[in-house]
Length: 192
Image 1: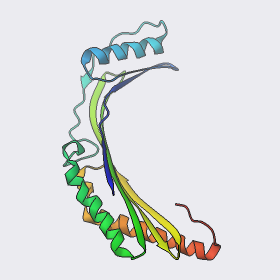
Image 2: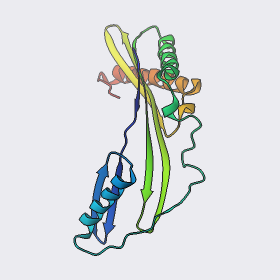
Image 3: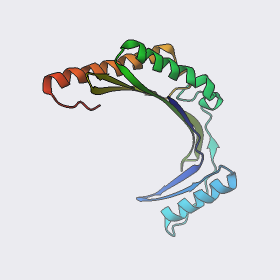
């Protein structure tokens, strides 16, 4: 039928710049010991035998994340997402009796960004990403056509609303209609 996807990926990358040289190291956890090891490795790569002094890092507290989220994706269950996919599916089928299939998809990812620079500043930020999309597949007189629509935002669960479902459903269906008009005018295949 339809699907929903969530992703949690975790790790820390450290990039060190020294003049026109750069070094990079990555670890898949955030223990202080492992992050310092990655930082030293990146510094050695960038420095190539130059002497560097260690920095004292000072946390810059962000009063507000750039992407304000009331309901983070990590706290949302699959059963909470599925009704929106079901409504998207039902709405597209209700638009036209020629609809044969709907492929609806929702995905979300979350990035936790930990930033440090050579001026001794460090901070943390939270970056959500959500996509909701649908393909409307229709058949008329043996000809199959499809239209696609999607929206992607850096938002949390509050992104999923009946309004966004309606916008995507109408757009997927109307793009199919544009394809139909192009077929009749140009006798060519329309690809979205």
